Image (cartoon, rainbow, N blue to C red; front, top):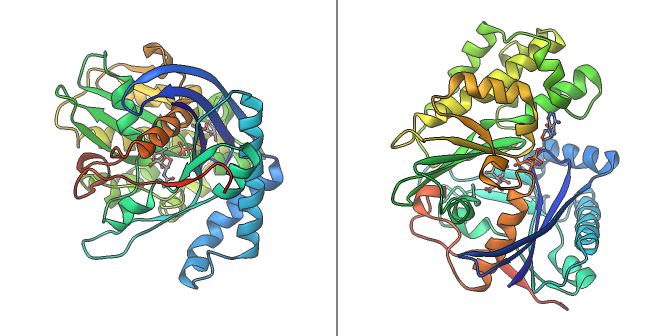
Length: 368
Ligand SMILES: Nc1ncnc2c1ncn2[C@@H]1O[C@H](COP(=O)(O)OP(=O)(O)OP(=O)(O)O)[C@@H](O)[C@H]1O
Ligand SMILES: CC(=O)N[C@H]1[C@@H]2OC[C@@H](O2)[C@@H](O)[C@@H]1O[C@H](C)C(=O)O
């Protein structure tokens, strides 16, 4: 199938698009990839929605809130623009949308929620292509975490690599896929990654992110703030587990990080991201032979150095394996869309804690 995968990640920086020819089990060919950055206004409005989402959800006003519908429409138009810019014929679009709230069940019997905004019918109309969306709900409804979804794609990619291997994505949130010698998967969210760093950079410098880690490299991690953050129960909790973009905000606020200088604060948040990954490694059945790092965080030398300092195996950018580290998530949603079309499972007990391999996703026909 000729697929286009579209991912709007938790860092809210834009939509990534990637062309993939795939049957959902193998890659035929990767094609062009691109990113359409969101204008500052949309980014700001989405950030506001993330903050408002828990209250809107509690009040039962999430589905038809005017600001939400407006953001969903603007977001979808940028996705349509990304598809048009790729300018390639496709059979299927994998449309993740934008997560604004992620609250999977925290104990058996509890009802979880995960919310991705985006108008799949509008995207199908704009593009004239069948759209697969809502990849996470079925898993959450079955008691799974609904995230991460990329591991099954990571396993396809890593087919020829020595195992065990760990593939780390550093987006707004970090997530890892450990692939064992027999292809078994252990995957979960590691902790905050660029999200708090971006917020810190915005607050202290007015910039979208700590570009090239310059701020973090100018400071030193604060040991006592790090020690307070290191005892967060999420880190020791065994997988399956996943995070909302804002899950660590309170802990970071209460850690005293806010009183640090801009450089020391950034260095501390970078060191904490790495500490979360080191804590994640303690949940693997066997140490990985290498870490392959994808996502925007691999462009931050402060983060990459912090990782190399705390991990026992070599830490390499995804490009070391011949992959495009900016496009992996978008490519994953092309492959996942093909899996939905073929009725193949998306999630597994080892990835989301789903009770069994689970199908998911919903399809909107080309001219709905
Ligand atoms: N040159 C750079 N220097 C520092 N940080 C960078 C650089 N380039 C990208 N980043 C960081 O990467 C982030 C974007 O990463 P990415 O696109 O992988 O996240 P995402 O896909 O939105 O999030 P997620 O994977 O959690 O859904 C930016 O917000 C920024 O913090
Ligand atoms: C709920 C949600 O959108 N989670 C994202 C987020 O960003 C990174 C991490 O947290 C990961 O679990 C997930 O995205 C990727 C694409 C995934 O599901 O594999």
